[in-house]
Image 1 (cartoon, rainbow, N blue to C red):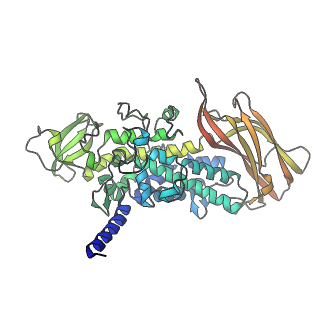
Image 2: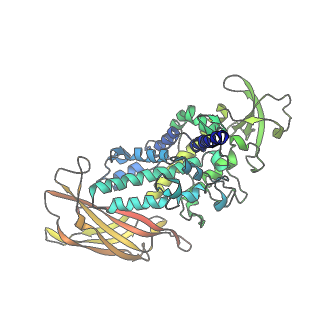
Image 3: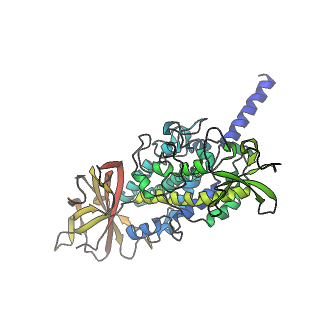
Length: 498
């Protein structure tokens, strides 16, 4: 082979390896970990209620909440791990962009990749890009298996998979807080060389401290009730994009998706005054010393309001005239601009991530008004569950699905807090049901088992779950709207039955 061709092939191979490592990540892995841990931290106001939920509803298995160890890691560590691994392999990063000014089937990275909204709900993600399957559907499947499985080791794996997949999903939410990921700015770089993303570079260092001090800002829950988009119909899509910006309504409110907020109110390095975007607006120039005392010309959002203004960009050099048209100046994003960005964007990245996790477990509590064994017996072959209705909430199981009851036996002195439970493989019973009116027409269901259970044995203890799998609907003043066709909703049962 000609030497020139050999060199060309070698260069092409090296370039391909570098580019695979250089696909534009929104945040460093440490930043994703920090944001994810902050989002589930029970001490953060407005954070996820996951810790309390696990303790209150699944206390038999998670008495330590997000600190409970599953397969050697705490729940919060599985979530953080998933949020880091979503960037691996690098090909997955191409699926982490969403431009809210475009139709969703065209909103992904223009050089290749689908919208992160569609990616979050795409089954078989592993096909073609690798990295495993961690869509919303996969998280639901792992959750169902964790609740209803009968092999102790496999159940532990399914719980781990559930929390890890949730970490993958909130990674996508966090990327929507990066203007580069919502303004079609690939920012190819490698180890801070090349077309770097200032927010990414800053987030690797000083930004980590900013995350640690950030509050949590949640979206208005009404966005989850907006009409569905068929490209990604599950309501979590609205956490990213309510389609209000595409309709010409930029906003800083909480009734918009995170991608809309970062697109309309901030610049990325390569989209400052880009002809492709009409926002940010309401801007002005202020000449002032930066925190180091160096006189700079900063572009501000809301320049006339000291309480709400924030830096958007800084002039590369001091201009002789502040009247020089802004478009004719050279702008960049320095660390002081990034600090203002982080102050605005990190709280939403934390809060919107927390919101997705809470929605996943939303409505997981049935009101089980009565449940019991047959009277005057120590061995039973059936369990009656009376008045299975959904908690007072707008989203409720509805339509045709299944109710599954599974019970787990814990030998005397051995429970989730001190040792493993022992499952009873014969105690899984699935009943097809139709919930036509969960509020006014509750169900009474009897689960029959193929073998008897020694419920009054002083050396045994039991806990279990009753699990709905099927449609989840929004009920209210208007017509019923099916939110998910394959949702999972559960309630905990124990042997303190009567």
